Amino acid sequence: MGVEDEVRARLCRRCDFYKEGETLECAAFKVAKRLVEQGKVSLDEL
Ligand code: SF4
Image (cartoon, rainbow, N blue to C red):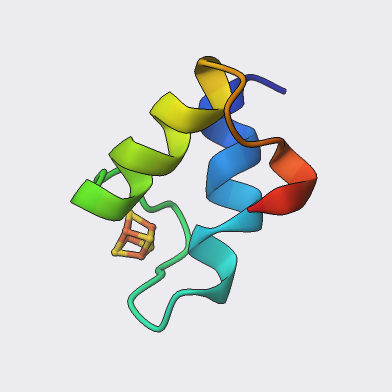
């Protein structure tokens, strides 16, 4: 599973706006993905 899918699974599934098959990336999603990619936040810390 790639970073995008991992963030989707951990962040979006807890979001009130999440819909199955969600492909949009809100600002919070983009920031979370970037922080994980840069190693500043681990997936478990999301
Ligand atoms: S992309 Fe943003 S708004 Fe959409 S489900 Fe994920 S966290 Fe929620």
